[in-house]
Amino acid sequence: MEIIANTTDFYLDRETAAAIGKFDGIHIGHRRLLEEIREKKREGLCACVFTFDPAPAVLFGLSDGKELTTKEEKHLLFERMGVDILIEFPMNRETAATAPEAFAAEILAERMQARFLAAGSDLSFGAKGAGNAELLRKLGPELGFQVKTIDKICLKGREVSSTFARCCVEKGDMEQAEELLGMPYPVFGTVVKGNQLGRNLGFPTVNLLPQESKLMPPKGVYFSQVRHRGKLYRAVSNVGYKPTVTDEHIMGIESYLYDFKEDIYGEPIEVYLRKFSRPERRFENVEALRKQLEKDIEAGLRYTM
Image 1: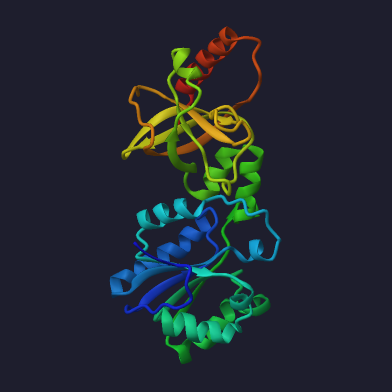
Image 2 (image 1 turned 30 degrees about the vertical axis):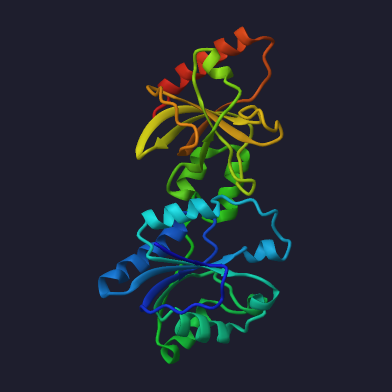
C-alpha cells in the first residue's frame, strides 16, 4: 500500500475510487465505504482512502486526541483490507479554510483523479465543514466523478459511529465494541521487557506499551487473543500500569499466551481484547497473586471465543 503523508503537494498518476472520512476505529460503517471502493477495482480503478491528519476535532481542540486506532494500526488494517493508496492529508488552519468547491476540484478531481467517491451521509469537509455528500453529487458531473452515499448503520437502535465505539471501550464493554468495529479491539505494538514477575511465578508473559494516543479500556484483566508472526494465540491480558519498570505511569498490556514459550522481545505483536474479566486489584502477597493468576488462566480457557 502506498502512503502519502505530510504533504499537500501530490499528484496520483492513476484513476481512483476513493473513500473519504476520519476512519477512527474503522468500524462497520467505514467498512461499507471500503467495500464500495474495492468493488471498483474490478473496473480498473485504484482503491484510495483519503483522511485528515490530525482529525479536525483534534486541530480545533474538540478532542483529547485519543484514538480507537492509531496511525500505525490503520496502516496495517487498511493494507489488509485491500486499500491501494492511503492519503493522510495535513490538517492545519490553512487547509481547513479551503472552500469545499476548491477542495473537490483541486484535490479530489485533479490531484487524486477520483472517478468514484464513497461518502458517508454525515460527511463534512472544507471551510467550516460546509461541504457534504450532496455538494459532491452536484459537482460530480462537471468534475468527472460519481458519488455514492452510504447511510448510517444502526445497531440495537443506535447509529454506529466512532463515538459509540469509543464509549464502549471506555466502559470496558469489549464485546459491544467488537460488534461495532467488526473485529476485536486491537492494540498493536512491540514486545518490551517487563519486571519478570509473571515468569518468576511460573506464568511467562509478553508486555506491550501502546502509543500514548491509543484509547485504552479500564484497567483490569481481559480474555484476549495475541497475533505473532501471523499465528493467533488464546491469551489473558492485564491492562494497567504494572507491565513496565521504566515508568509506572505508562499504561501497558501484559499477556499470558496459552501454549507459547518463545522469547520475542523487540518483535511486533497484535493484542485483541475480547472480554473484560475482572478489575485490577492489589494482593497481600506474591502467593495470593499467583493463585489469582491461576484462576484467571483457568477462566480464560473456559471463555468461548
